Amino acid sequence: MNTQPDSAPLIGVLGGMGPLATVDLLQKIITETPAGRDQDHVPVVAWNVPQIPDRQQALAGTGESPLPALLAAIRQLNRLSVSHIVIPCNTAHHWFDALAAESRAPLLHIADATLELVAHLAKDRVQAPQKVGLIATAGTLRAGWYQQRLAAKGAITLEPTEQEMAMFFVPGCYAVKRGELQEGGALLEQLAGRLVDRGAEWLVLACTEVPPALAAVKSRWLDISIDPTRALAQACVNIWLSHREVSVSTSRNSADESPERN
Amino acid sequence: MNTQPDSAPLIGVLGGMGPLATVDLLQKIITETPAGRDQDHVPVVAWNVPQIPDRQQALAGTGESPLPALLAAIRQLNRLSVSHIVIPCNTAHHWFDALAAESRAPLLHIADATLELVAHLAKDRVQAPQKVGLIATAGTLRAGWYQQRLAAKGAITLEPTEQEMAMFFVPGCYAVKRGELQEGGALLEQLAGRLVDRGAEWLVLACTEVPPALAAVKSRWLDISIDPTRALAQACVNIWLSHREVSVSTSRNSADESPERN
Image 1: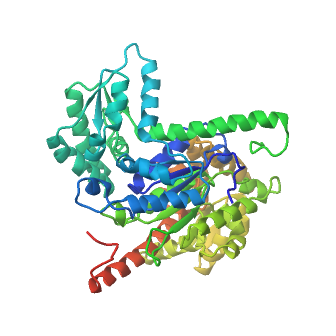
Image 2: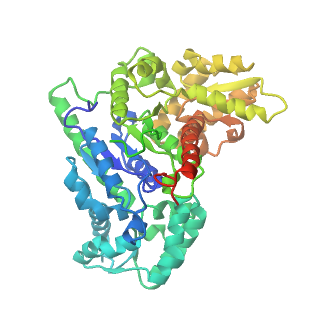
Image 3: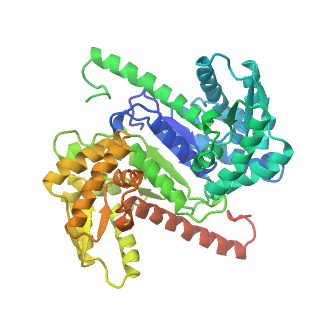
């Protein structure tokens, strides 16, 4: 039933956590795509259904597990024959292995996408950054996905203190979820400043609520910030561009049936 | 397989025409929703697959029909048991009846949603506007959806001339599709000014590429503009809020099983 040729990608987005973070990913997929017309853009289907139990509360032991709702969403996306699945919510990656086991389509991990972007950015510098600040939920900090991958590249991760989490991160994040980007951005800006004061050369904004909030307040730290949502968008775009290039070169040999007609 | 209770809405978006217009609708659905947390937001699944033949070219007789791709998308959304379907592309409404006939879920017409918004706005004025400018594709202008509905409310529709379509609308619209919002916005701003010069009191921006482009150039006409994408978003939000209110009142009678826990 897929409207794409069999081999064409169809990116499935397991979204809704929060719904604005999903829109942010979809927007960044479009921005990152070199395109001259609608048909050049990445084919995406986004499950943006926010009725998923709160991930932070579940990991803190104060709320029910989101896993059943996440598994149901994975099954829905697979019914549409998606080729890959991405999750624009760092904290939800706590359930990544269980979701990957249930899915026919492979899942891309947001920390893998981010470290590819870090490696790409570091390539252009004389010296790669030694200290990287990590802004994330307590669940993501505890999981260690980013710290382990950064350590493998020789970088030390600086984390917010418990007090900074309570004062800046948690209220900032939930302000964004209420749609109050200015209020959330102001709080997260302060947290970013603390990490820079302690020596962070780059910041990884590893909670999908953070990049739109810092953008809303025109944060002074955006230039040294790495946005995992943008990294995930680039991974999706790369999958699509690889296919488009193959399609174009195929169409040079067989004139008909190419999706790249002009 | 729906993660919602049986009676809960799930809005299906037949998108991709263009992909940015779909993101604009998703964003406006979030903005229009009174919500204090993720779970309060409208559940949406968006089919944002832009590999659909160009609608303007098809209606001009210079390109293939998008109907097969649109029907395939309708079938995909129905496989997910969506409760309603919306199409954030005015021109695609040319195939509305054929799509509605194929769909188990009812389709909301973007011009119906827009006229509800017009009626709502006119309610607060001493005198409803007599002349309304319409910015739309040639296909949408020819179809007459907006003109007929405005006439039923006693308003005259002012349309761009053929020359204005060729000079401003067509290049402006395709600039937006290339991602060049400033260039597209500048062209569409000129078109809006022409309609105002001829006496338009309000403008209906009946091509989903137009509202983001005019917003990008901070158009002086935004205050008198009616955005059908926002009207469609409000229709989606109203469906969801009606359900949320019913859920809340039900939960007052039976304490368990409400999705409105706090």
